[in-house]
Image (cartoon, rainbow, N blue to C red):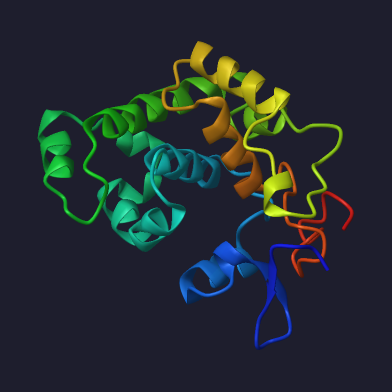
Length: 198
């Protein structure tokens, strides 16, 4: 059994961050690290990772439904058209993270997502940075926070007009989408994406 894993009353091993809060546990058990390959799903997660920058993921997850409502279900077609009135509304919306730079980045990223459709689309673009191997962490300290691929993805996305897509944020996105598997050895979720062996 890995260090850093907690066995719950259901006899399943999870990392500390997913072991106690029921919301975080449900996210870990059902969603985190499972493959997402559609434009809408990738755009939503890209947007939420940008909002998470500097904050805890639990904060974002608690507000996710508010974010979905505020950002038209993360439909890039709608979000790209947000103007000053909508931006003012968002800045006054206590249900989301009221950060002007991150709100403007989400609108900018929606436009960049639409533009990427001419070149295969956002999902294929993001997945093109899948590495040849995935980390095999035994402890939380062994989980990387960035990689050569996340740095390359960050650079490529910036070139395409995206914002708030630094290497660390993009590595977190890769983890969330299943592009890499950073579940600890011994976790009941290790290998569950079907992309990487357990």
